[in-house]
Image 1 (cartoon, rainbow, N blue to C red):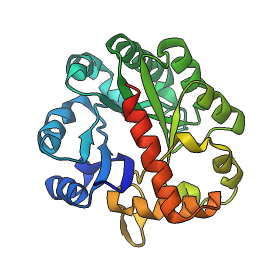
Image 2: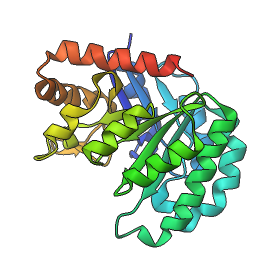
Image 3: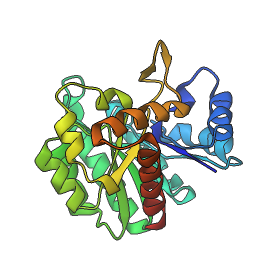
Image 4: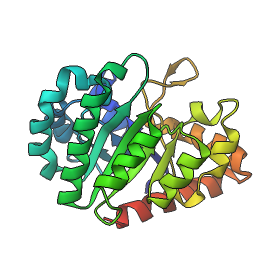
Length: 248
């Protein structure tokens, strides 16, 4: 039985993809392994197909839209093969702002296709763009047609309240939970919408790249922030995952 949740990880970016998937599955961690391009989907689907706990998501990362926007047709063709979508969204950071208009076109296409299909669960990137992401979710993806999980959310408290009103969930990792100045925001997030993630291999567990099993580190940090026991925090996250998965 699974006892940890990593709702955003890039297992296909580890040195040994198949081993990373196997380790996560054997550890009983419910893991959403996101992809950054539609062309990566087939391999992810094959490697995770026989696992009990690992699910692959179909993505087109906003940071790659400047060079990969043309793959949106392939993304849409593959969408019927999965319930999970990610990594998708918007990135208004200085390195990627030049493609922001193109990102919005791609993200609108993603949201509209998911709304039409129904029952999809999306892991969404929103760097410096929480308001724009929420505007687009509100416009294109009603909560009865799909669910959004805001990955590594860094918006404002008002953005968080609005996201919750739109039915969004939030996946949080150890690095953001330990960041000075973010405590109040994270404490304000609705407890019944919280999930954990690692965003490995882009985060560290000590000196190594974080893996899904390290979602336990996020549970420890979350339990301290919310003044809960680790057992209660883990139980809460698992209940939230079950609620999310039952909503489709």
